[in-house]
Length: 197
Image 1 (cartoon, rainbow, N blue to C red):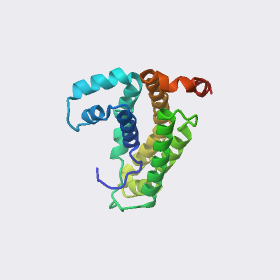
Image 2: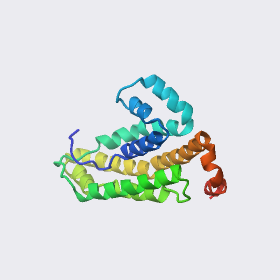
Image 3: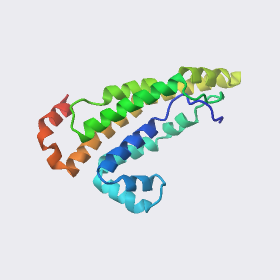
Image 4: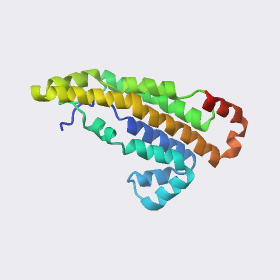
């Protein structure tokens, strides 16, 4: 498939970058780099991450390895990629907002859930112009299939991917609580109210 503009941006890369920040804060950044191919013993790194972050690491891998994520990466138009296009700028702004919200919520124990920022990210992560090009520039016999593919991926992002990200967020905070119980003792009531809301 042509390497053009993505109809959907790389949500999995956003999750990966945030997880790396969280794990680096827990002195596990090198292990995370190792499992992502940056050198080091992959098996021992994976074992350590699974022991320290058993639930959130599992959800991270489920997001990363989901077949629809691969389809997102492959769904591109044929236009040359323009630098600083409005969709990329909007996605970058939404990425920063979501990243900051997750780090504050997970590491600093703020009571502001990052879910609203995630919803903004999923909206910014869709490029209507790239979708129009992706569909209109295909042979007529393929346009309906491409339209259906875009609709399915949009449904995945708003539905299943959102569910997995929500599970990853709560699992992340739970894993951190287990790893650093003293840091979370003061926030126990806020924690409970978040889970029960």
